Image (cartoon, rainbow, N blue to C red; front, top):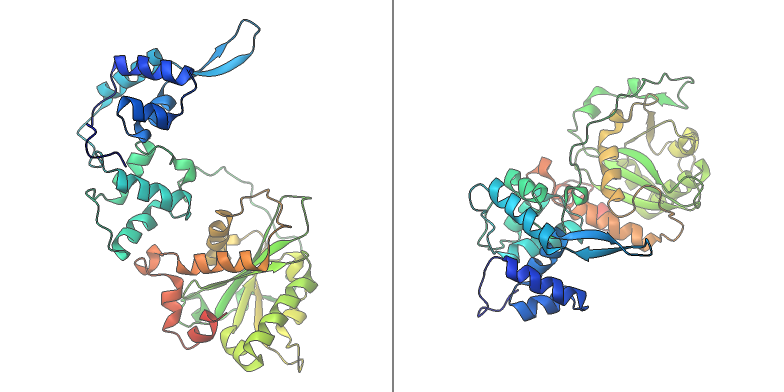
Length: 353
């Protein structure tokens, strides 16, 4: 933050001329801020405001700072300006918001919940709508709507696909209706998160508990049915056969080939008895695994679509798993999945996982 003896003031035309001279001389934004007596965030924003490209005599292009362009934009913004922003010069609040969104991958709603849960005290107190308006209005230096998960994008109209083959095992139509109500713990949804097409072999296996939204994230060495069965066998060894049955009463999956071995998924590795019941969604109906689909979006904040996942380790998967389980959930009034599972009979063994 800026030292207390530095005066808070607006950047004027003469300041912009000095910024241009210093910037062209190779000074960093931090150095410019120190010399002119501004906070470094103000200089970063100013350079962004006046950024443009200039063509040289040899037809190459370079990026420059234009004080004329910056002044024009500043004048336009002044005309559009309404009442004074609540955030003012509360740099501590701005830095907290940016760190939470950029480094910890939290949504704006979760950021405000973190402030309440951590009992943080800032001069600025705003609602979620105002925070989104600030982000849209470029109040923050480094955060835009692109960094905010769940910002609404108008979906394209897609042609409805028709299922061309029957489910591998028991259809979701035969799943008991009380599972739909999320009143009992132990009913899971399972899916995979893959890397870029043709890039690597590894992928994530994600299991989401329907009532508490508790997550288990594992790494698949190959995207095959045998590898998925191996992971469930691994979990059965960890929890023991009896505990596995109480923790994983049912698992709902899609019709991907990695889940085609329904007998292997349901059968215990030890005595070949049934260890769980697997239900298959209708084809092209991801809404029937809504919890799982939402969990995949959480994971994508760390590993976006198209990324090669071959370098991902089990330790990385568990770090993401813990982050997801500690994330404040709006549906639980910003308690986490770990908070919700803690009061359940199976909570103790899952929190040790």
